[in-house]
Image (tube, rainbow, N blue to C red; front, top):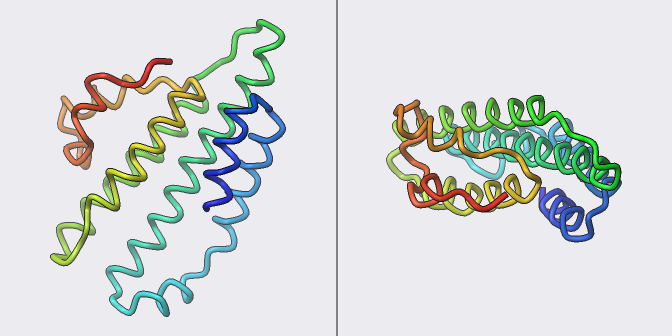
Length: 165
């Protein structure tokens, strides 16, 4: 997962589509290799282990969507061709929806949680990377305003003033 964050960031900084694709492949492999038994051994509380496994899956999915979008955008950048944002934006939105619903369920069932770690830090990093990869993020504010399940936990300051694209 750390390699995925680093790979996506490196691809955006160096503006290399190949590095973004490599990051996406690495994140897909991390999802496939995730072992439920390992999570259960690390976190004996069943709610905690289930959440940690789901969180890992969600972050890998979200970063993968950002990496694929960055690869598309960077590949097309030199050719001045328009890139269809819909597929990667929809993948990102579905993954955010799913992650926030799972988080809400976890938080309501486990009184000993630390939501700032689960939402603020990864959420800010993912939104910044998504905006850097030119994924539209305006829909986040729309979901927050319509009180879509889970979106009340996102920081309103970020949603009202998304990073410049």
